[in-house]
Image (cartoon, rainbow over all chains, first blue to last red; front, side, top):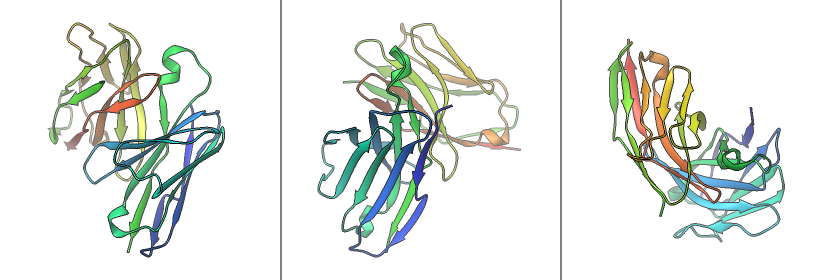
Length: 120
Length: 110
C-alpha cells in the first residue's frame, strides 16, 4: 500500500525557534499534500492544501506567514512553524493524495504518522 | 458545503460485543466515503472505503455500507476485540478535499 513518511515524529523546541516538519510519499507521486492539526481528543483540522510547484492554499484563520509550506517535488512537502510559541504545541499530520488512479482512487488520502510538537 | 456528522463518544464495550458507530453526511455530487482509524500517538490509517451508493466497504471484520437514501455510512463490527480500541473517523472525500467527522473514541474492555 501507499506509504507516507513524516519526520520528525516528536520535537521539543524553545519558544521563538522555528521547526520544520517533512512529509514524504515513499512509493507514489503526490501532486497534492494536506497539512492537518489535531488538538487532544479532537478531530483533524485542515490547515492548508499543498500543490507541487505552486503556493499552498490556506484555510481561513491559518496564518500563512506562521506556517510556511513548501511542496518542491512530487514526493516532498514541508511545513515550517516559524517563531514557535507554546500555543503552537499540537499534533501535526500530513497526508498525500496520489497523482495516478481514476475517479475514487484520487480521493484517497494516505496519512503520515504525525509529528508531536511541544514548544517550551 | 460538504460535511460529516459522527456519533459522539466515547464508546466503551466489552470484548466480543457488537459495535455500531453512526455517520451521516451532507454532500453535493458523488463523494467517496471512508473510515479511518487512529491508534494512540499515531497518524490515521485507512480502514475501509466505499466509492458509490450501495457499495460495502469491509476490512478486519469492520463493515460499512454507502447508503445514499439515508446519507449514511455507519461502521459495524460483530465482535470487537481489545485491540480495536482506537479513535474512528468517518470521512467524505472529493477531488478537492476530505472532510472528517469529529471522531469516536472506542474502548474495548477484556
